[in-house]
Length: 379
Ligand code: FPP
Ligand code: MG
Ligand code: MG
Image 1 (cartoon, rainbow, N blue to C red):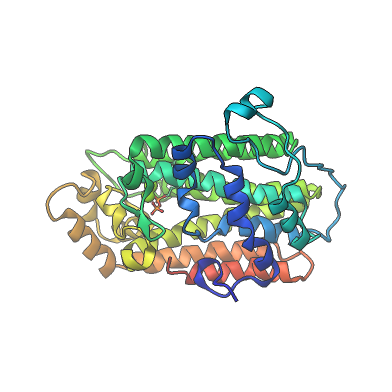
Image 2 (cartoon, rainbow, N blue to C red; image 1 turned 90 degrees about the horizontal axis):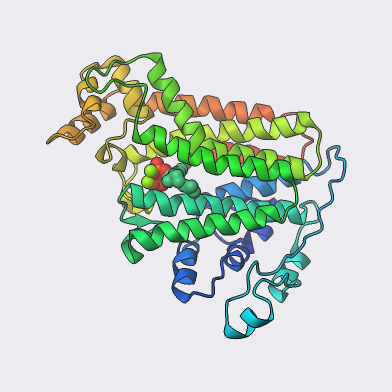
């Protein structure tokens, strides 16, 4: 079988669907400008883990036998969103609603009837938004690698990386509008705003007095709020949107949301742990990056609670000679990593509990399986 998401065994019930993901996403990204085409498709060359689309597909399947009021979605266009701009089609029709293309028909042939076309498109939209955020994030973080390759900012420069991210958001917005579902559009538009809010909270911690950094429960609360906005918002709101597109009643929509929220929080906690514990080689992106960026994440915040010495380093964002190494050592010697893991475990337990009422199915088993995969992942 093909290597699955998170590098572990593929989740059987959506494995077939996932095979078409890269191709479908690339179809949403065509631009008549060859360089923009290249930059915007750059992160689709090395397949990501596709965690978000996979969750949307699994959630769609897992809820498919539950009550629904058949929201209908007839795709205005399942084909290319824009035609490449050529002298011919500028004159003819710059933005035709193209019919089904052969690539899409092939996909529909193989597709699972328990996933609606709108839900499949939503899965692709989540990956577009996520990839856009990575393009921007790598500029902000001065990152040098992503998915085992040079990051887009290194390969093409900051200007093109930022613009390509904007282009992805534009195309995601068009695809979203074409779902013709105002509530789903509002959810995903809110996600984009949330990503920026989370990134801002990280850039400027308003809960901390840099002159006199003091540990308090608020330190953790601020971190978790930031974590929700920068990571769990996309996962939770897209799970919610999948249930909405399925036409399910509010109890089911809420369960889908709670699953996504808790899994998303766990996912980022583990991410912040891996930054301390796994090599850059294995991660496919720089390791130990957070301290270098001046960021105090969960492992350090828990270590700080029991070792007030860390406060001074937090206050100056690990900027002085030897700070990063000192902080790293103190975190590794503390129980901060263990506490982070334990908190992530609490969240995945809550995620599993949220969907415990769903009828048994392969897809439900897949959603539960995602909980343990998130805990076991090393990249
Ligand atoms: C990765 O975090 C980044 C995010 C989860 C979101 C970043 C959000 C923005 C840059 C806001 C603007 C984005 C959009 C789409 C409007 P990380 O740096 O902790 O993870 P990494 O180790 O994978 O780089
Ligand atoms: Mg980053
Ligand atoms: Mg970042």
